[in-house]
Image (cartoon, rainbow over all chains, first blue to last red; front, side):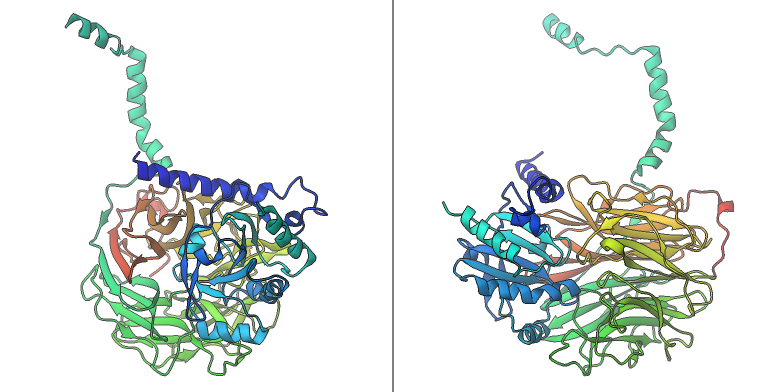
Length: 189
Length: 439
């Protein structure tokens, strides 16, 4: 097996282990009353899989760069316009962002739906001001093993994935805020 | 020299007579072992790959069909400079390449954008394409609304007439995730997902046209609690029409189900669970089932699930009693290092079954195909088709076992639509087992 193939195999193996075991392991054993990951049913990713690099076209006409997110706690929310649960949780994501300084915490949405006009109208109606990146060919979704919508990937300040929620959540709940605070605190060197 | 001979003698193989018997036995049973393991079938021949290159901003699709002469048909959505167009192309020679595409929608019509290719059905010179039109009464508070339209060509897809509205509810909501199929009697059957009743989860709706698409019947709700984003599928035999979709059961259990009509699509049975996967999922899987029927009336279903153990898998099952019960499901994906995704199925009258799907990893996205020539009992080893990262595979087969496969490849900075044909061998089962019910 060539070096390149071997490396690809290892990446797949690690990603597979993360998806198969990592995201489930954290849901058992911990105390929901003290662990916001458990309370919010956010699977912890203990191996710290890196977010990777990406440049996505953004709804505002600019570029959404992973490099601009390093050093912040990031909630990367994958959604689509046809996904009912995605649209339901969107306002709470907007309110979560309002709870934190955007220099320290960023809520970023990513969609494969190339429908800027409708998305702009939808977010305006909700009064949500979150960045939207277009993952046209779902390259980023695939890299981060996003297999259903909505999926929210929680990324620490060091650019490593620390958690993942599949399905909608109330993102401005006390558990969500506690989760973000915990990730912020954990990242302090 | 002696030293070398002595060294080699350590590796000399001594063959015991019983070992010879074992090897001969293995050779004798190998065809059976191969069949069970689904080995690659060398009798399959592939046509040339045909590539269309698209400089446009976005391409969604393709959907493919093939006629009895081997002419291939394809439809896709293309967006450039914020103008979306449903395009259709056909080959002039069997197996391709595709000719110049023609628009399906009128310039004044703006197709609603979604990650779904148009649905296509072809019979003779008649071509039907369903697609979603951005709702004419769309408002800022309902930006994601569309009408379901049926477009028809009577010259083999060289031109299309004005489209017909399929949904009859007039509501400014989504009518999407559609399927279209032409039954042996010529009736055009349509299915889609529709939230007109205002429930949290939408319903599966159907309609039909018995006058070649000129008029559409009153819409009929087949069932509630439909998974909002998993596309519907339709198939028909001479005596039944089938609709498949993903249904949400209590506890967010997602099951692929099939409902059957024995009155030409006027009414449908209650849905029957196909695989009993017990997949609990509180998000949108966005992965449809696919259907096909052979000449003896065996209904085949292929679908994606993660099951009770949350392991992505693709299964096939069949029904010999018009969708009342289903066989034990058979897993099609075999790769250990990738996740299977987006399966599609095609079945010819002889019972040749062919499935195409993606095998994904964080770094690769492959398109693979696998076939069965024994009516779904065994499947060949999946065979890789793509060159660049491939996605959204689609497949169709004609009555001669000639298969057309289509998929998209993203080759920066352009999109490529790929088309290839494949000739399946004759069925490997006793002819007496096939009793043709179809035309």
